[in-house]
Length: 283
Image 1: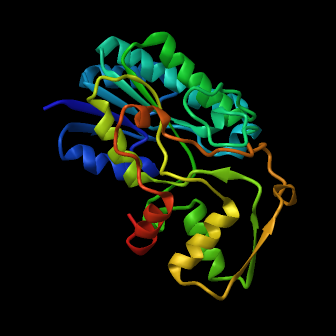
Image 2: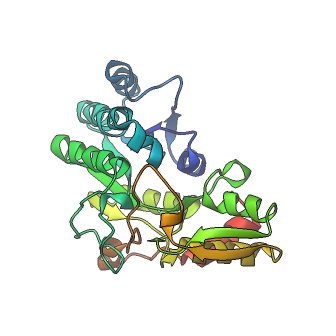
Image 3: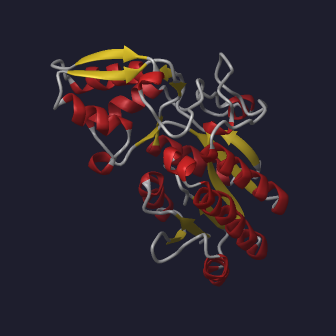
């Protein structure tokens, strides 16, 4: 049985991914506080002692505004931490799988990004994640990088957009929602299944991995309330300038899974279908 080492296993994606991996692999699932990717000697030693065939590097500082406020910690977590994991991958000859973001692009494109568009991040989070990608490319030949965005999942433990909207809509008669940012909402279960399908193909490289389609935050919020059957809250579309945030956000975060399309692989389902399944049966 092949062996898989996972960092950041208690995060949103880890909670969807690890149970699926356990069906086919011997898995060592790790996370803070016991295992810290920022501590090079410790994390490299633990990975080397396990001698995995694959390393799933999910651990990351994902607080976009927090990264902007504390860039040193962002680079330590997202760039240096990723380099530490890549060094361990090199020493064990393991295939490395890295979860990156659509924020590696500047967002000025009018249409969704494909893998051949040029990265040009506009905030510290995007920069540190992209530098993590570059560290992997410098050190390794066997790797998969998956860029995704607007991820949802985790059920009641989900603290991101979907559950926030459901909670706030139950407490307020009106909600102001940004209508000038576009992304590709992506379900953790679909993301996990697609990654598992790809890792043994041997077709290494960087892939976009999002559910099909794009939408604004306002459009996403409308769909959430529609699926949940919530009618007592009015959504008001507003410009993002109404909300003061530490980190700039790109206008366009939407992506197309262009490489897998060219490979003739089954596309990920539309985000609306995935969202409906998640809201009606959260996982």
